[in-house]
Length: 100
Image (cartoon, rainbow, N blue to C red; front, side, top):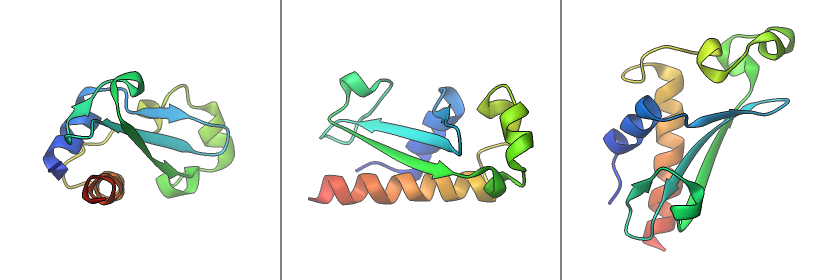
């Protein structure tokens, strides 16, 4: 079964986020065996957790001026409330999928 630590490691070590016009999407790609993989083409299922600029304490203008997700939010994953929310959200989605 996939763990929080695996998801945290994934976020720390990969470009797990993508800019969208109104939000940032954090992705997690897994196989049916619960293995985290680095590309959606290798995955049996992908999950997304979307956050708005206001979730990061930013206005839409500040968000649009940033060059990448790391520029918006470059805090540590461990213990940070926003990253904990992302990890928890992705974990719940993955667990629900793997249990079905």
